[in-house]
Image (cartoon, rainbow, N blue to C red; front, side, top):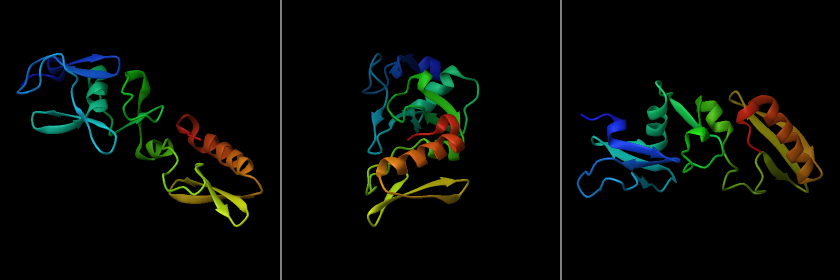
Length: 153
């Protein structure tokens, strides 16, 4: 069984096959983008996230969770990956698609704007504000305080 460095070449955040395997030719980009927006590659019958293979090629240990610093699941440059806990990975999420304001941590409360943040398994209410920018400032301050470098506003 060949090692991952025998199978793949890493170039600027992408994996390329070093060997021809079935319909896949050496030199072609490895993997496919799934519906969830992440790139997967099949190795020895097992589907793997491409960014995990890239991390393993550059580091001795493979953490349980890896975080994309810029939040882009297709930016698999080694500089954009960092080990994280499940909680830290969740802190770095983008705004939810079902958000009624389009701003992370903000919701509409009548004619005002509520702000809350989820910390250590509990929702912390930050207050109700007259403008979205005031509510967003409260969220940003709390996020940076609690989540540090994993904060995404």
